[in-house]
Length: 171
Image 1: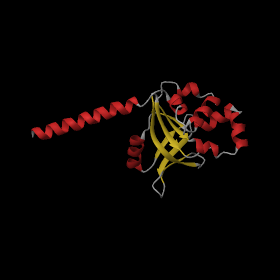
Image 2: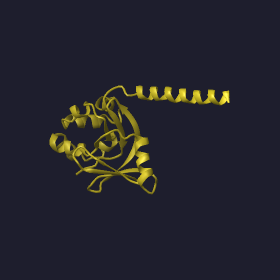
Image 3: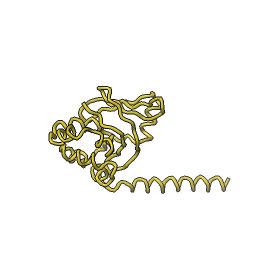
Image 4: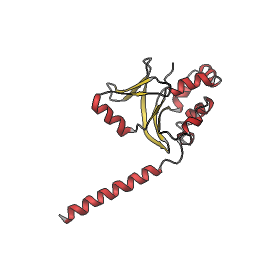
């Protein structure tokens, strides 16, 4: 009995310690975190160009379904240049990747287990639907039917979480 109690206490202590270490991984707000990560630096640049930097420096919490740098490189350069020169149009596209609330991997999986799909409202009031495709990948679908695949989970910022995606949901 004493050995069981000691084992349980050790497991609890390890769990608490790892949670503290995990929480310390958030070194700044979401914008700082994306700027420091080469995979999401292009998203941080686009958010600043769209005048959304102040929003993502706010209290939150927010979940950003952030297109990775490869996703940005797959946009034709003339289209990307036009978007970067039009902050309002760029903001419309990027707001479709941001939701209020913290939806880390555990929260997303819990929602999917409950109903098979989960819907979230973006900053611009659109609906994002999370589901699983035939290959068992987590997929996001916007209200126009555009889809992207989740490629990274739980990149923590002090005011939310970044979930990496492989494409840009365009309107």
